[in-house]
Image (cartoon, rainbow, N blue to C red; front, side, top):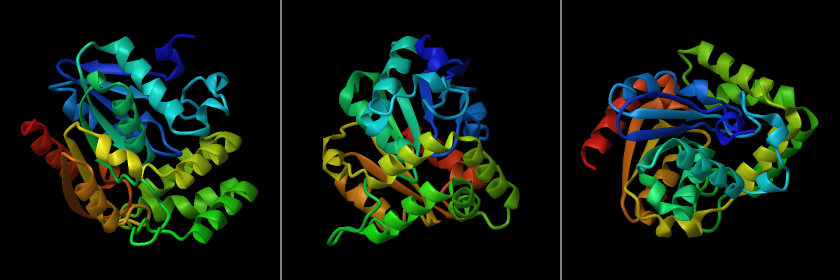
Length: 264
């Protein structure tokens, strides 16, 4: 199967390339409020991570995807297939780190990084505030292991936030529930136990960290840490509750990204 079929790659628009990479439990449809806007001036590349959305589930390899590097390799392959120009990578949540790892792996493929709600490490460690104690993460993963659908229906509304838009929480719940539970369990473990703080200083591409003022998954302290640690980093805080501003505050997200792109 081709790389493009494996990751269900969809391309629209014309101009400099932008690739959009979704977070845990999601798929490329989560970019529907942003991608059409940018397709007016960019070639927009949408993809599903293997194991998510309409990707080729037969391509899922537990060993390859035991770390985020497996997904980063896929992202590099997709870009090599679609464009010869360096791309702006827009990654949500765990895919912000996937985009960074892909950039470190193949710098020529990337012009800039836009990280929506990123976290290099979810677990508190000394002075570092990731938002969770290790026991919290262990408990979360145990619950997910024993009752994935129950975990999804409880966690999705908390992750989405946006209390005034309950339909978005329902959409995220449904997206979680469509994901193969065995794949989701491994991806969750890889996501929440990863620690890529040591990689941040190596990222030379211009980087925008887009964060909500109130985010259960990636608190503001993480955004400040990213701003201090990534060499060429801008932090933009959106007044919004939740972890998915591209869905719950799309206009503010578009404006922040546009402002960043104009400065490149």
